Image 1 (cartoon, rainbow, N blue to C red):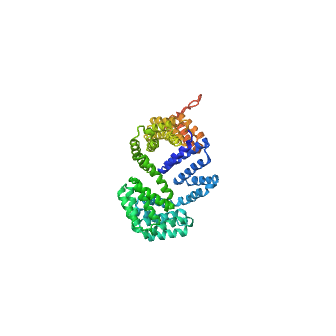
Image 2: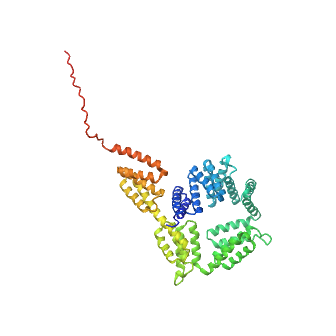
Image 3: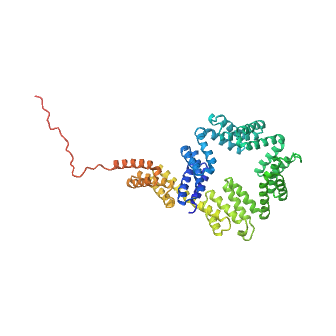
Length: 499
């Protein structure tokens, strides 16, 4: 299959994002083996190696991760800073994993608006931080997170001090902290407008667009022509324009976007994109709106809800020939991707087949997703069979377990017969043979694994040695031909009777 290494890499990234790091490592290793066979371009090969190094680091396999980062620095000096940054984190992770976990939890709380819990996590992380690493970049990141939390909680004086302190000690990222400080000053100058804007954003996210519009309008009323030339004012304008657009008030939305384009260079490109989207929305109608909502849900991993939106979008097309609608195949692709992401491979398959046949939308993307589906289906079925086999093996149902392991191998052969997962299943087959006392079959498999998977040679040799010991002890002891049993000696001396 073309570009199989790239597909495996994407699958590994998805597993990594789901915190399934051991499986991600396995997939990245498979991708590298395939990449060697495919002679993958250097840039893509290095990306897979970086993903593997990051996974190894999180799993605590620090020495392997360090070796990979050093190798990447040698192979790709143009990105030395990126790799060196990760390499520098390894010693910190060895001693500071608990505080890094606190920071990670704090970020999660912050994103879910649990500000008190986030503050506590950031504060504890900084308090427990190892003294020898208090000049580390990540330590400054935690301080920055705390400052953002303080400003969001309206602890403005504390936030101001935190940003100012960071500007002095982390000079390379001074602009980052200056922006935070700027917003603190705006909050101090326009507290009511800031609060109303925040309330409007929360209402917008809750899809209460009428109330959001009212809140943004009230926030704008706090500015005059002398004070409206600041980032907060244009943030409010942008939020109000987005609300108008979703309410179908296209004329009002267009007016605000054009005003921002002419006045605020920071949001110019973003507003121009929204103007293009607005013009498309006006011409394509409800199908586009439902497709956009479905796509937003998809990006939030709400795959089932996104499927309903994409299906409704297709049904909303009123054309006598729906396939002639300019959005039809784009929506169909999104629906296929949603099915695939939720593991509904059989539902996704006919949609991709239709898209490949038509060839009217993003042919490279469709081919990529189709190939990815094939990988997932093969790996998914084999993984499920192997897992079911392991459960039967644990219940001492060795014959049934052996049957499932062999089915998994049949699915993976021959395309995946050089991958670590394939060797894992072969090892399970050998262990099943051993438990069933089919010793010769087991010995042959262990010897085969020693040759084909030298990275785990020692493991297989131990299994083989134990098996041979067990094999010898299970065989009945036989005497060499021609030998005779020695007769037992009997004491022929008679006891003398006492006279």
